[in-house]
Amino acid sequence: MSEKLPPKEEFSEWYHELIQRAEIMDVRYPVKGLYVWYPFGFKIRRSVYSILREIMDREHEEVYFPALIPETELGKEGEHIKGFEDEVYWVTHGGKDELDVKLALRPTSETAMYPMFKLWIRSHADLPLKVYQIVNTFRYETKHTRPLIRLREITSFKEAHTVHSTFEEAEEQVKKAVGYYKEFYERLAIPCIICKRPEWDKFPGAVYTIAFDAVMPDGRTLQVGTVHNLGDNFAKTFEITYETVNGEHSFAYQTCYGISERCIAALISIHGDDLGLVLPFEVSPVQIVVIPVLYKGKEEEVLRVCREISEELKRYRVFVDEGEERPGAKYYKWELKGAAIRIEVGPREVEENTVVVSFRDERRKFKVKRDEISSKIEEWAKEMRKRMYTKAVEEMAKRIKMCKDLEKLVEWVGKGVALTYLCRSERCGEELDKVGSVLGEVLEIPLSVESKGKCVICGEEGRLVAVAKTY
Ligand code: P5A
Image 1 (cartoon, helix red, strand yellow):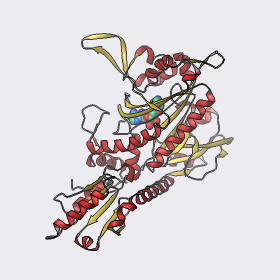
Image 2 (cartoon, rainbow, N blue to C red):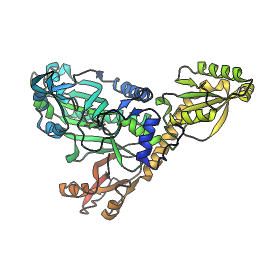
Image 3 (tube, rainbow, N blue to C red):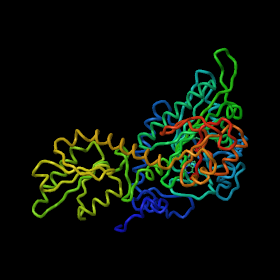
Image 4 (tube, rainbow, N blue to C red):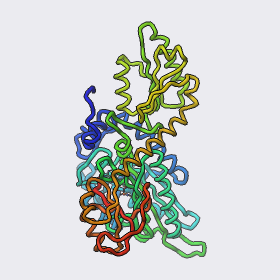
């Protein structure tokens, strides 16, 4: 454990070492693309997903649909199956018997849910329907697999599905979902680029797709969430109809949106530093670590004060590290694990009725009166999140460049994200997509840039788009 982490500049090595040393994922599971959550990693997952749940619970109901989908249902929607057929794991046998109908391990749950929605929805009174589930899904990914980033078993797939009576209402829902995801990523202090994906990169079966992309330290982007307007495409396939107020039968309109544990990959990658994890107070498994600095003869007093402080702060996830190691080794360990606030107590502090406080995202140490700590925590947590967000935006800005000419763009993509302008013609889009992935028209970005300019390929009027190498 004493060996140092590789520097964050060597991002790939840093990431892989960190998730193992901080005990987030065990990567030794003997199936490619499948990983094990350690207890510490699972605690991060729990607090991150409790934010997501809190947001979803405001207007969605939680459900659970089975993990196995009959081939007959999975294959119904033409576009959808075309998009997924190479990624599906199949269950073909029950014991020694070959199954009559093959069963797919869900790659996502549209085709598990929508045949049931057909049964649930009768009239306009049953609409809107808004549900979500947090489940595992399986995708036989052929691109390079990476823990939390590209998985063959996505363990923490939060998928929401909604049904509405009109296209406009579905549009409204898409906007709301984008708002929910924005709030979620803001709480994690992660800035995102929000784009409308180009036609060729939208979700199979969708009318359009809006995606959230985080910019990773190596300049590649990670798609950390998507919101899809499905129109009535799936409703037509799965015969999801409802009786209108006038007694007519009409197809329903749908949306769906999803987030996976990639949100945790982004959290780790964007905020971490050479010493290890840096986590916002809200999601850190150990929000406050209290470290006794012991001197001979004063041990009892110091420990007593540490325990009292821990008792006062017990509404938070607080831990007094009473271990045998020297304070330096404890600092190192809790820096690696991203404890948000560190409180040090030695004999002098006991005498003065103070403590030494430091925040994981800063080098600064300062003294605080003991009876003031409890009332300060919320404010410290808020400030810390703000600082982390500001820093992340600054870092992101360094990795994004406006490239109005193609040569500059070709040179920059790969090092970072290029912003440029693109007209709506398919040919120009395809041309640009050869350089890097066109993330699509930029809807929101935490930088100030002109939204219109000349198409980088043909010179006609174009809209702001982002181009990047992606994970
Ligand atoms: C939306 C939810 C869907 O599957 N159906 C229900 C829709 N969209 S999606 O874009 O295909 O996936 C949603 C998000 O999941 C993440 N993701 C992955 N994470 C880890 N490993 C994978 N193999 C993987 N595939 C997709 C992405 O963040 C994606 O936006």
